[in-house]
Length: 138
Image (tube, rainbow, N blue to C red; front, side):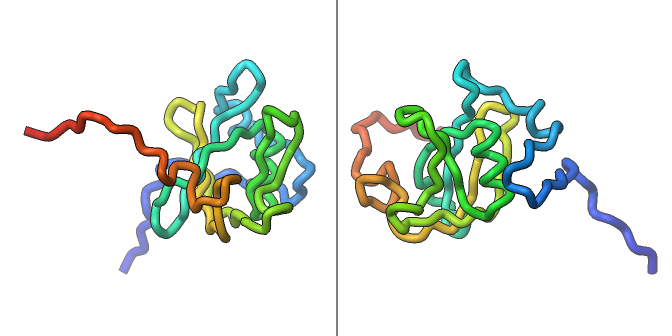
């Protein structure tokens, strides 16, 4: 019986285990950053697909996220890095990170401990629905 390998959609990128090291060139060159050098990071619960929050990352925050197992963001208001859960205890353990097709948004799948939102709600979207006209398939 011959062994066949599964088709590869995109090669995995090897990362240094050094959280202070640079992003791999393949990732750095694929990112489309805003004028402040940031990329939106959508955070999703890995097992329920629940969208938890949106944060911002620069290259360093992304590298820390990919090499430490914990999510790190860049605070636009405080102009500093912050690792989710360090002060609140509401930790986000990284399960995977993906880049969207345009290179301008990240999807960070996590195991969320406690509330994801700084207001204390499970997600940053809890109780914040708009009234909308809904569409229907014919």
